[in-house]
Length: 293
Image (cartoon, rainbow, N blue to C red; front, side, top):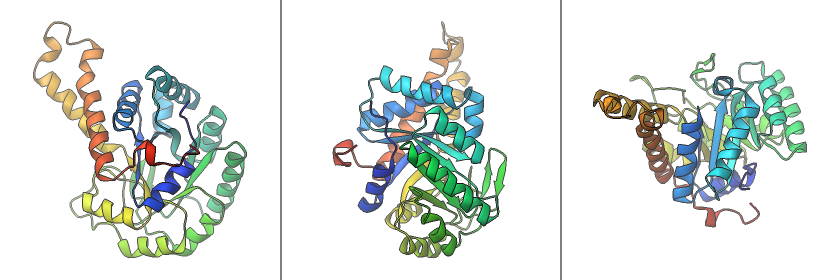
């Protein structure tokens, strides 16, 4: 079974100056599309669920079993990480109990001292079960499951303190936001990313990867970004392909209304988006990742 916790994968990405895509799933089609893209390209993949998506899909245990079962059904042979995206303290513990092999504890909206203490607890609990942990310092702009961040820059000292907890990868605010980027967005703050990259060896995570200009993402990868979160680009691709199918009247041709046919163009579009992004962030094929995986 190619389910792994992901620590070595992301560490190898930082050392090799490439990134691994962390793609959010929202249902069965999303899961199948992401896994197909990873298998076709022979690359490792991180599939993540937000708290909202997990609730929509029926809970963390259902999500874990769905991904695990799909890996088996599709005969997936590449390493797959099942990750909780932007989980609060309670959600991180629930996902650990449900069998996720990687979790994010997002305490950025708490006072730093409380964020730190809860991060230590989650790291201790997760590591006792062989599960990797991501934490966050500094707010990621935009909205994620009702949590709104203004996008402030992470404090280098707070990053160093959080890294000392033994966290496996770390999200730090560098001007990135969730969702679509507004026209007046000023871009990533590379000076702060450079400071953070010089201060810690822990692999860094870029949230809000959808919509950041490709050249900025690629530059960030050379400076320590090793995990790139993607969701909005897949949602937009799915919506566009589905809209074109319906507007072309294909849902009215024969049994074109069958959900297996109706959802196929959008599902294929997610796979195509996965392959495109995975290509330009430089994700290495399975034969080039650590042998212990």
